[in-house]
Image 1 (cartoon, rainbow, N blue to C red):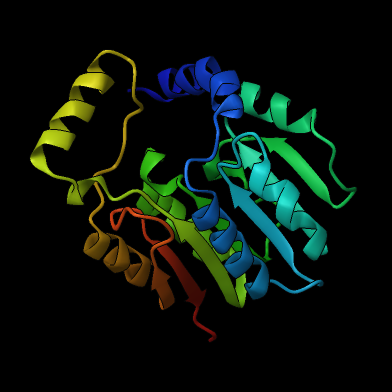
Image 2: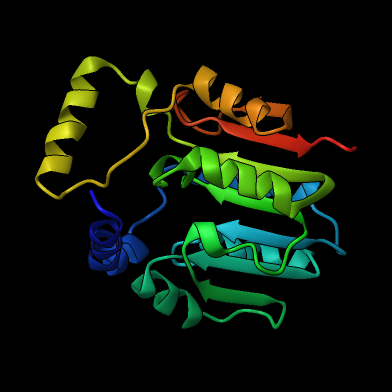
Length: 207
């Protein structure tokens, strides 16, 4: 699926995405609590793939500045219509171009790395855009660890335009990609029932 088709896909489903209910509220709240505990009031935070802004609106009050980005105009339009504090900006931009006001104390990427055209290139940009010791906080679907039946189903749905193109990370491969990009993995857990959707916190090593 081309970059333009990916944008059209997310623009088309944006309002349905915004209206959906969180399936596992306890897991979602536990993740937000963990993220908030890792951030400081003086932090500048960049979020990649913010969608309709739910995480940003919840967590931005605890930091100095939160820049939430997405490449879907419809997602950003919905996010901007929600009440938010003055320290939160929603920016329409591709992930590869979101780093112009680096460095950041933390960069968040929730369920987005597997959707990028070149996740390895973006990981390198993230690393370069963090302050020494800064954190990358991620949650990533690792489709490479799904069973054959599920992978086949998603392949069919993708061919029908009902599912986006994804990178087939495995959990082990994702960890290797983070370490190759220069990160030290400091925590890994799973919030919810899906072990193929790990929450990983990685630190840019100090010089």
